[in-house]
Image (cartoon, helix red, strand yellow):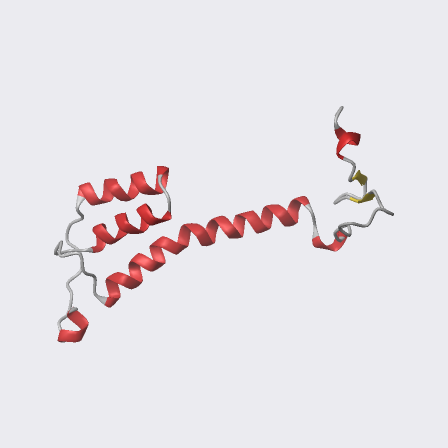
Amino acid sequence: RAATKGETISPLEHINVIALHGVLEAFGTKGCVERTESLWKLMDRDGDGLLDQVEMDQVVHMSLKPVEVAVRAFVEDCIEVWPLRGGFPLLGDDSSSSFAGAAGEEVSLDVNANANV
């Protein structure tokens, strides 16, 4: 709104503690809809339920950043556990019931083979 009216927005001088608590609660225990709604309430300075472009950009960035970090960590963990250089077994290929694992050891694809481990 302010950008379309040619107004400048002053930096935040205070933060709504109740809205901040809502953000912390949403990011700790709730889903992505609640997280985005809580960020929206935190960034809505005048409480009218509307955000200007800058505030909206901040909400989107803050909403996506934790997902970006989690996906990056997940991919790094997956590569660490199963390096791409080792290849993947062919699905449905009954001729090979094992393949070389990350450290070169043989890993069985038979679910019952590892039951007593």
